[in-house]
Image 1 (cartoon, helix red, strand yellow):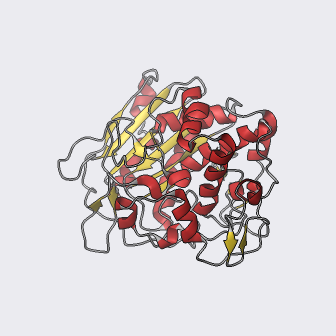
Image 2 (cartoon, rainbow, N blue to C red):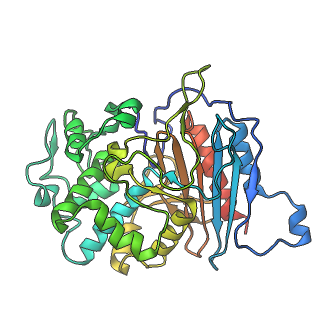
Length: 386
């Protein structure tokens, strides 16, 4: 892959390939409603702006778009648009599972911060404290990089994902140490703590630290500490070699060079993402996760405050904490979440401090930053339409 295909935030300088495909532009949009009370007659007469937003994403070339919006009382409304399979024309599964890419990072950060609260990890300890001698060469030095800098992307470590092709992602199994080795063949981007730059390498190292400290597999720690704790029934960390998506899901696609049809990338080996982007979930589970996180259901107050201490993400207006991002809302205030891309899928969303949550998934990574901004605009619409 020549760009970071499971990124969370994307800035104007992020490289993208191809142009938006139009194969699904004529697909019929469908909305399904969850447990929300029926709308009043006057509300029913108004166009639903979230549904309109999803329809627009399909017109822009997304094969499918899914959204789930949750209120402070826990009631939800679920939307779909487009088709779940371009070959058969099958419907998009309501609240279907998707590869959630870099939303995985927030789960990893939660586990690390839980271990901080337990006194097993120190945020300002060096990477070498836990992984002695692993990070060396080309200006990369684990003795000078802290755990906090890994979680906040201020380490200066190079990005391994830029050197793995989408076809390698789909077919090759990577050990976590393989991913670190790929990164360390390249020069450090800057002196630790002096800048912000998104690097999946940071979270692979964070995952290795979790395993070293706990003596348990990373997937087991995520499942025990987060997934089972919150009852996230549709969220999991795929086992090695598991290329499938377990539950009903729309198929994922990759935008190809102009004029070429979309290529399906639903079943892939997710190991290239590992702690940076391997997990699978649904929009509703992600809403529940981010809402519980902000409510203090996963972290002690001191660690949650550290997680929400942010630095600017370039000139985008977004800010990055420890595995958690804040983005401005057009109606005022911010929402907290992450987002993620991995070949076949893109997700965007998060929750507000007053208990609203929304998550949107599409079934191909948009070809340029404007496409991602359109996905984010649907999240903004959902959170501002109270």
